Length: 601
Image (cartoon, rainbow, N blue to C red; front, top):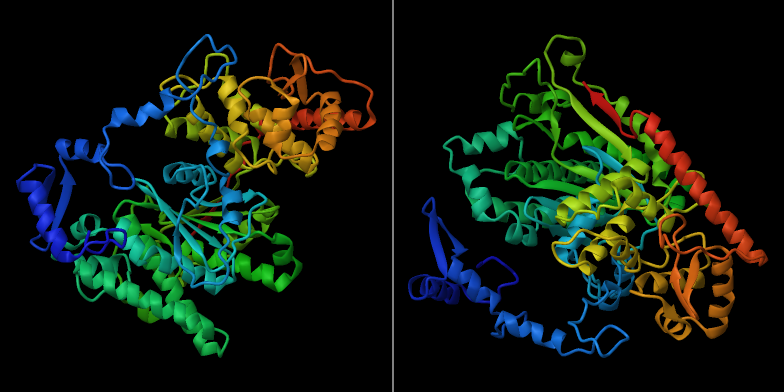
């Protein structure tokens, strides 16, 4: 707590009050760790006391929080029936993640490590962790084609976590800057405050041989003392020095080589430390403009080389550096390692970090990336059979496939502890989202797992607690995503209309659609006719409309299909998308799977 940047109290104040809260009130349990640190946890009484505190540190009974909800107007049209207010739609509480990134532009400033949840985003920190986890489909590299927002400052890095996982978001800025930003973020003050705490790290240091295990087994650099404060201070100093030297990386070859070596060593040390304390690391590298990256062959080759070098460097075999056991070429460094007994029946190392690459059409990188991993040479003595070696398996997969979408739906349901209503299956819900988010302008089916996760998380908020998710809540959840993601083959104004229709709990009239969508009267009139003729909206009541998802929602309504030329074009697009979804589902049913595994060694 003394080192936590969020706790704005002096050391003396903390020393006084944590003992008082333990001894006089019984709110704390205090345990001493190795005589150096005190671990403070809340007792049941302490947790109850915590529930009485508001975000602005006022005291309020939990039942009083509900008063505002029950004093609102009834949500239904029939005012003779009075009931509690429904939860607000997430879109009324904030923006989707990508839109909130664009809204958080701050101009020139000193770059820093930011919390995962930007200001104005409707998703909580935990929901954003779940959203990011939806992009990770491999023990290695997942490629996710997605239109993403460019950071206002490319030096910014986002750090988020839950109980056992850590996510780092970084924008691609070239090999060395990207590597340095990820490494220094994982070993920053915020990371030590929130993640690499004494209660997690100190158990690693309690063994008499702890220093040798970290240095010679895991090959963690810069550690000369098995003391938490020393390790924290040293890594923060190394990170600060590395970031300062980035400005001079192109000054001469020696400087570039030094920075490259330091950055790789720091990242490998960081991910190994996280692995040792039981935290899974996923690094999200965002490329907003892949056309700019691939336009220059040398620039693109540097990106592929970055992943080829970095991914296998961050791997361990039974707590020992797999890179040092299999790939290291430096003769001096090879002498500084523990001898390891290799099990003939279990030779596979494990990666200490997974990588998600997101950006427009990044799935096109798959073949080049697989070829790059396959070309990695192993240590000569192992290649010639003189020494028995381990293997480093690296999975490469695309996150936009039908299987990827189905896995995303299943994962979010598990994380939110939700079931589907008896009328729906994983497959039917997956098809629902592919109809809503699928982009038929691409040669292959394209749908972002992040959009699917965001829609499901919104549905989880809208549905009654402990109840299965119904088609109504699933459809309304789509309205919480960006209008750019909804029917991306439509015009912008039409997408805004569809978002407004998805948000609505019941059929809505013209004025409500115009207000929610933020469009003009003439734009509404023009697009309503086209959408109706394309079968994307229906009129279940006179002058009241709701969204229609072909073959999915609503099941008891039939869209009108007129002869309007533009409507017929959209109808053709809709039918093409339906055919594309069926073909993609059938194709993947007969394939072994979208994941390719490269085994190094």
